[in-house]
Image (cartoon, rainbow, N blue to C red; front, side, top):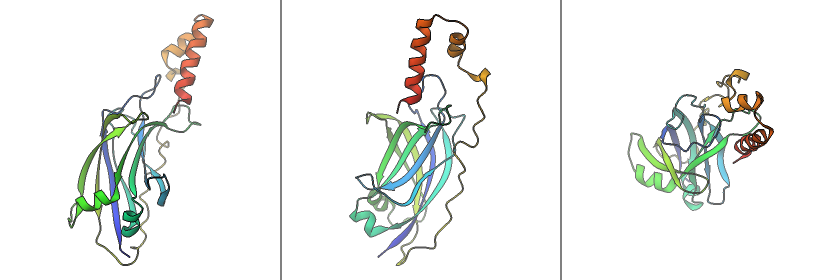
Length: 203
């Protein structure tokens, strides 16, 4: 049985789809290793801090580490999954799905070969309709094979994805919402509330 340490660095993304109506994009990646049926292996999914400034072109440079059983990875056709989500201003709700990238570990292994330096990969981000919308770039590096699992490495402390997000104040409310509160007709109020609800609760 052969094991190899896999280091992933989620570098940046470009031209991501804007999935909110009334707030800017606040994207972060969620990284996991899963099979074709969605069963995940090794560590639980790991999140990166939110990029508050990049919007559709975020930058992270966040590290993730895995110890991979190479035989298992090939037999079970395991994939590296990078799911991109956007933090919502309503903090009690989960992140809103932007899109994801899936790359087979076998493909990464074959492309890496016997190299010593990290490899850079850029792939299309597929949105909820499985359409390409933007690009994601990450780097990766495999360590040398070992007969036993390498010593467990502490997962880099990427922090709470939401920890650096400032608290929302009333003055930050979207101007359309302020106009509604200020006395727009009841019919428009109903319409705007429905639209906002769809944005908050949508996938």
